[in-house]
Image 1 (cartoon, rainbow, N blue to C red):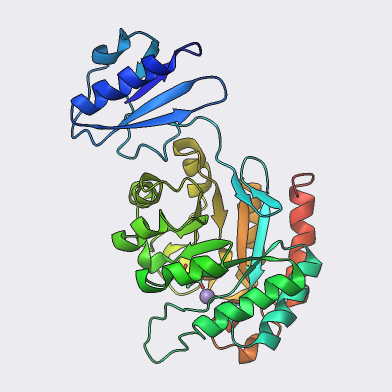
Image 2: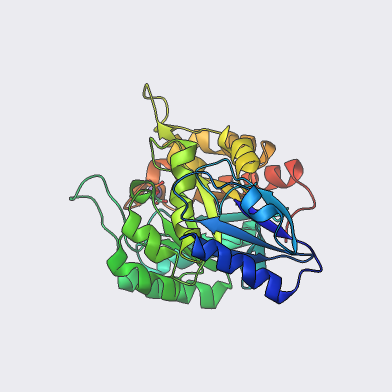
Length: 335
Ligand code: PEP
Ligand code: MN
């Protein structure tokens, strides 16, 4: 339930609505807007009768929120969320490309790729320092040393940094270095991590689990918002595939579906969906055409020797060509 207050409602009227919500044993969340304040009711096990609030002084409307997720829903907040980063915005018409290797391997590797993706127009550098690998024998990342390399990349190139927090033990450390904290597909329902990400003080990119429904994904995002962090970017990276022509199936229907259901921005990762290089550019172009708010793309200057995901990483010149094509598809919306 969302209680919409009159634009002339007094502070005392707002407080008495909050007191009534609390007296019923629920949680009240005031949402100040440009014009008027709304107060959300959370923690109610079943439907709340709008009539209990509709006639209170200062209330103009009590709107039932029909979805199981609240804070992330379009019903709760009509305007698109804009992610505010240092010198950069994402969402609400601001389109951003994040690119870089799957994993940070060395300072030289990271800087070489960062310079190339920056020259092509990327604004955010991606690279895992802590890697979620299917096999315990695969490359696991450089850990904190990788984060330090990312910091140097940021200092030298001015690119912002997105990197993954693999578990709740490293989240705080990752948040000190990252401009955006990535939560991976395998962690989408790691509720301890989601809650902690809600308190980390940095924007969070939440990947869709590889067999998660849209509702489960939005409920996972709800955990982060419920802890007080409204800066969440959703990222579709493909769901379990049948057949072997692609690593996963890129579900582009999530773009309009997320935009309908939620105010949060959605970014597409065609690299992990494709699993193979030649599929990445067409999938990226399709995502842009379908209205994605950004892209997350793996790029490597030497994919054959990459320690992870080389076969799906674009060569820098392919990435540059793709950026040109994207600009043709989406002119005028670049920061
Ligand atoms: C990644 O972005 O490198 C990654 C591991 O992605 P995902 O969680 O989507 O598999
Ligand atoms: Mn990868």
